[in-house]
Structure formats: C-alpha cells, structure tokens
Length: 166
Image 1 (tube, rainbow, N blue to C red):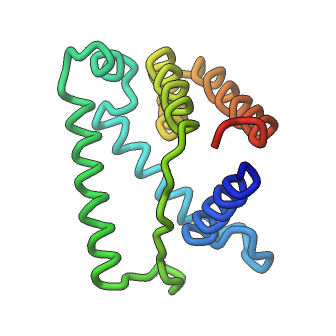
Image 2: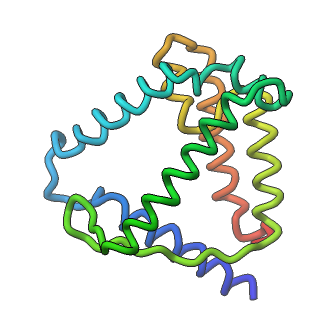
C-alpha cells in the first residue's frame, strides 16, 4: 500500500514538472530561461506593492486583525478557479504547445500534518516559499536564514519521505 502511494506521488511530481516547464531539455541556451526571471521579478514587484510579503500583514492575518491577506488569497483562488475552468473548457495549451492536464489529488493524513507544519512556519517567520525571494529582494537579508531553513526542510522531507504517512 505504501509503495503504491509513493508511486502516485512520484507521478504527480513528474507530471507537474513536465507540464509547467521544459527545463531539463539540453538544447536550451541560458537566455531561454530569461522569461522565467522576468516573470518572477514582475511577480515579486506585485507582491511587494500589494504588501503580500509584508511580515506585518501576515501577522495581522494570523491574528485575525485584518482582511487584507484573506482578500488577496481569496482573490487568487477565485482567479485560479476561473483560469482552470477556461483551460479545461477551451483546451488551452502551454506557451510551448503542450496540452495541460490536471491530475486528480487523493486526500491523505500526511497533508494535514504537512499543512500544520507549513502554517506554523509561515506564522513564525511571516513568509511562505514564494514571497521569500521578494522579501530578500526588498533588502530583508535576515530572510536568507528562512530560505536556507526551507531548503533544509525540503531536503529532510526528501530524506524521510518513504517513512512518512502518505
């Protein structure tokens, strides 16, 4: 049973990676990846201007003192739902012409534990993985410690993955 679930997760990781990027193709030059850098920088600017990377806004959210972050996250969910609906309805393809497929996800108790650990880290540090780079870009260099901790946590997960409940 455990091997079956691990195999399912491996498939999901591979299918997600292959559906979103064509990284790993050996004939791509370094400038091929500039579009990802430009998109990331623009995304970071939007995060900073929208105060999504603000430690104080994130603390307000976890203390239920402000609607700001709930509005941003709720808006992102609504936009994603509409985008997925359009992708499925119109058969939209990637920029490279690949079809986009959605793999059904199965619930397991490991998601609850992982969500609690992720949320605790988010509340303690005021950052989740995406905004880390934007926070560093604003000059909050102490966030490098959080980034290195996140990388270490990912490495530990990979090390213990087969022993964790999935």
